[in-house]
Image 1 (cartoon, helix red, strand yellow):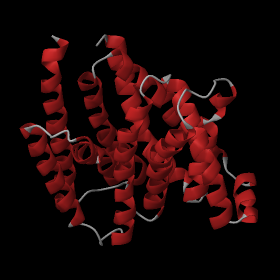
Image 2 (cartoon, helix red, strand yellow; image 1 turned 180 degrees about the vertical axis):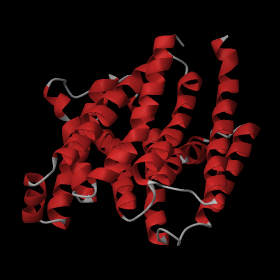
Image 3 (cartoon, one colour; image 1 turned 180 degrees about the horizontal axis):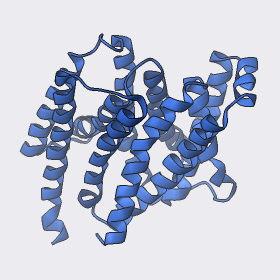
Length: 291
């Protein structure tokens, strides 16, 4: 990868890490459903300029329901119910574990021995994190948090059916497909009057966070990531995603004073280590093809 592309990959990782902090700040004023709705409403604005990609509405809806709606709605609810931002940024990355597992179950893609080792290491780290549940957040909040990587992984699998579609156009329409049902959910769960009240009394800080989440973190960052995946082997790009939990944890520590106990810290490092093993195993597999 060229230095410019490396810089872009690092920039995207930093943006995604900071997005967890922005979501936490916005949730002080907005409900999880409303925040997620606004996030995708902003990110769907490019639909006014680009045509729908040649993907069926059924597939578009399925990808949007999992990769976007399920993942980010669970994220907002989990953070709103007390899951620390830094810890959550690590939990999300466990999607690599579930993606490999789902690919094995659905497509018969057996993980390599190294990937199996990585899965075991990451699973051990998640069990360590489970051992810290109940102190500063509830078991139900942790269960909601785990919906996020599972939805993420499911969306990764479904996304294979949209290969060849223009990345920017596809993600814009995925955001639109998520925003519409999210708006309906918000009106049902929050009520029309409270929703309007929240929108008309939103502070400039919350508005800035919503714009950052929608325009920068979702629309632009996903587009840049998609271009990197298009122009370079996956094994060269994906490891940069490991920077996200480090940025998220550091930013949360500075912004909210988040601290990690010994067991939780070891568990977080173990999860990241297991994911690194999985990604390195995938890279080793791709080297002969690149050569």
